[in-house]
Image 1: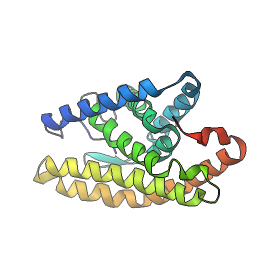
Image 2: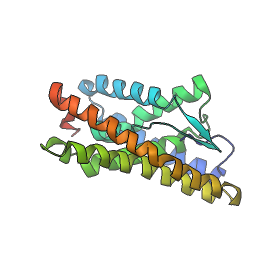
Image 3: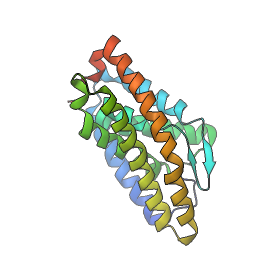
Length: 199
């Protein structure tokens, strides 16, 4: 779901950079030394998951795993996702440096929403399935709505692409829910400490 350079108006690109910079700054401040390995792991997972993508107009369809990232890391998801997107832009020209701010915001804001909505619930027994599909729904569809809105505001020519972005991510949401369920079930069995969230 990378937005390419040259698609969005400058005011939107600038606003994206401002909001993303604020999120990254707060996330870095919250990043304690003991969370660095987990943050690094999820940055790598996000990076790899987004590499397999199908282009759709000015965007693309791929696994996001932003909901899972936010669920585990909270606001630390901002710098984690920023680094992954930066490396994708530099190494593979996905998105681009100019739109790195808005692309970070599109992925990290839904991540934070997943933490706020499901962070406490994931620590309780019997809610793994609900949390897994809830984070997939919020993570994927919130990000899709943000991208669709940005494309719609960019001009009449992008309105069809905005609708396609939303429709194409419906199956992604289901697949991501299944992936989230298996990952969270695994963590609960072998490494429950990772689900304690951030303070």
